[in-house]
Image 1 (tube, rainbow, N blue to C red):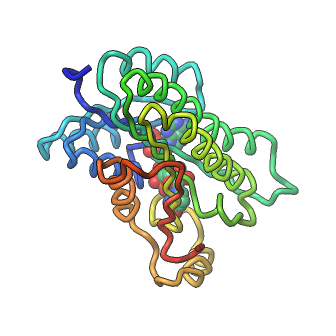
Image 2: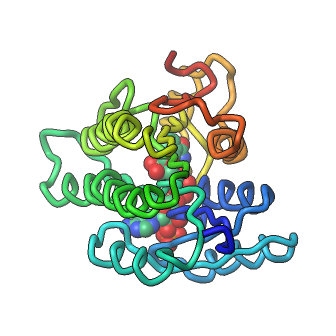
Amino acid sequence: MSELTPTALVTGGSRGIGRAIAMALGEQGLQVYLTYASKAAEAEAVAAEIIAKGGQAKAFALNVGNADAIAAFFQNEIKDKVLLSALVNNAGITKDGFMLRMKDEDWDSVLGVNLRGPFICLREAAKIMTRQRCGRIVNIVSVVGQMGNAGQANYSAAKAGLIGLTKAAAKELAARNITVNAVAPGFISTDMTDALGEDVQAQYLAQIPLKRFGTVQDIADAVTFLVSDKAGYITGQVLSVNGGMYC
Ligand code: NAP
C-alpha cells in the first residue's frame, strides 16, 4: 500500500464549501480527487488551481444520487489505485418547501443526495480503509440537522440522519483506525445560501452571536483539522462551525 499516493476524495468539490475543502487538503500535500454533478468546467478549474500551487488533483463526474455510479467509481478509480487517506462527504442539495406541501420527489431527492449518497460513499470508502487500517471520514452536515428549520423538513431530516450515521460508523470502524466525524456549518455564504432572499439572510444573521456569516474557509479549516494527525483521537463527533448560532 505504501507506494500508493495518499488521496482525499471530496464530493461536490466544484464550488462553495467543497471547493475550499479541496483547496485546503491539496495544500496539506494530499492528492485531491474532487467530484461534481454537472459543473465540469468549475471542477476542472479547481483541480487546475491545486496543481498550479504544486499539488495533485483530478476532477470526476459523480452523481452521488446514483448508487451504481458510486460503486463503479470506487472500483475503477480508488481501489488499489490510491491510498484513500480521507473521504469528505460534502455534496448536498436543498429543495425547500413547507412540509404540508412537500412533494414526495423533493423528499426523496434530498434524502438521496444528502443521506443515501454519503452512506454509500462511506460504505465503499470503509471497505478500502478497513484493508488499509487507516482513514478519515468527514461528513458535512448542517446546523439545521441539529436544530431543525421550518421549510427544510427533508434537508433537516437528511442532515440529522447523517449525524446518526457518523456516530454509528465511528463505533463500527474505530477498531480499524478509521475515524468518522461530522462538521456542522451554520450559515455559510455560498451559491446554496445566496439563493435565499435578502430578508431570509437578515433573519439568519440576527440569530448569529458572532454577527457574521461563516466563510467557506471556516469550514475547510475544521475539516483540515479532523483529517490531520492532530485529530487522531477524535471520532464520532460533530464539530459545529456556526458562529454560536446553535450551541
Ligand atoms: P453548493 O455551493 O450548492 O455546492 C454544492 C456542491 O455539491 C457542488 O459541487 C455540486 O456540484 C455538488 N452536488 C450537488 N448535487 C450533487 C449530486 N447529486 N452529486 C454529486 N455532487 C452534487 O453547496 P455548499 O453551500 O458549498 O454546501 C456544501 C455542503 O455543505 C452541503 O452538504 C450542504 O448541505 C452543507 N451546508 C452548507 C451550508 C451553507 O450555509 N452553505 C450550511 C450547512 C451545511 P455541481 O457544481 O456540479 O453542481
